[in-house]
Image (cartoon, rainbow, N blue to C red; front, side, top):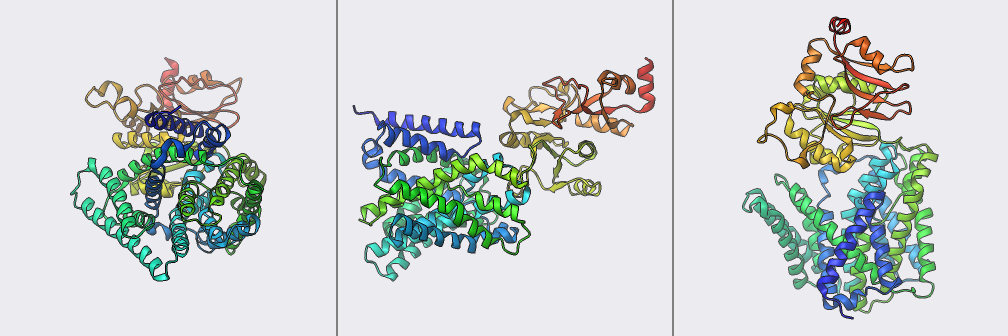
Length: 602
């Protein structure tokens, strides 16, 4: 039965969305579910045959999708940020990566019996750990700050650099396979690099001069990427991937242009493309695999996981301040991701057309390594981190946006109860006062690109937006809702409910739960502190419970937080009534002693 192409594409979108949603719910890399679904509907059941369903559209679709994925990933490499990485990360992304590439190539050559050209291509593709797989794993793993920083930076830097290096290895193989001289190979690389750089500079000029309206900038960038890829391929065969990779790196490092909204668009587009592409690529796998291929893939995975990764990390971190426990966990965690899967499939298609020996072995070996590393490390990394005593506790810490007297007072009270706090603000005077008080701080707007890269959220699981800037509070809530979840994001009102009319009220999707008592605003909180109210902590017992606490301090007491006996933090808000119980510690705003006495007498 022939199925309409529109129906097939719609079903692929639905399946891709379900895989992404399941990955979000289980906090696992989405690539795992995409590949498994592709294997199930493809070689396992025969429900979907991409070659027959897509026909002549298959290769161009995969090529354009991979080009956009490489461009989006390469835009994240900012050379200015490389100066801030530590010695260990520097080693991991330089000679450690090269050592891993060589060892992976040797392993696949000797174990799987593939030729050296394919072996080096395999090594270039699989020495990379990308942000798309490491970020969800870190949320589940929750290691200490040094491990999290090293793994995150390794993915950020190696993802685009590894892609560029893999493209160069591929170009060398193709040039050799077609009998081209070294000059032809150099010309191919030069044409791709020249077109990529030229298009990036031209696009940057147009964006800097605002010659493209903002609502068309993402669209224009998409057109420029595809045009550079196609033009480069027309002038020099297979040079398009070099063009888009260098174009992304160049555009990401041009000064005085704002590309955040373009990156957001490309991220959403890449999510859509990845969701469809990986299902299609996994469905193209042939089952059963050629004799010995499955066993060889498993042995390569074992060598990569338990020998090559630990050795390369050990060599890369020599002389750093990391202890052996931290090195052991970093040497265990190395999930492969989007670049390896997408680029290897495109390379395999092209090399098979050229009659390259062993080209058919590339995709099965890469996919076995991807699935093996993601499954094993997702299931065992957290227990291993606990066993090595390098895991952070559950993320019950608090990120506070603001640094005035209200934010600092709340942060000080939480810190005294051993709750992890981090104050973030771009007000230097306020941050300076917080640092003088001994509070951990981050100088910068927590919604900025700088914060996205440098703000360490290890152990942090909530946001309290407590600045006196209403719009920025809502913006912070909107951003960190994606990180912490809607139920763990709060704001301190700037306008009282009766003062916010329809013209000034935010839309429903921009609102977050309001902190503390009904009608509590930032100005009212600050005024109460100025007139003698104070933030007080107290332990509750069976004999001295919450009613007795209120009776002692007056009926005007405002509950701020409750800390359960197991250390879990409860935040008082307008959405849910909090009833402190025996065994809790409470943090409350209490009136001055004279006012409390009058209230009790009354």
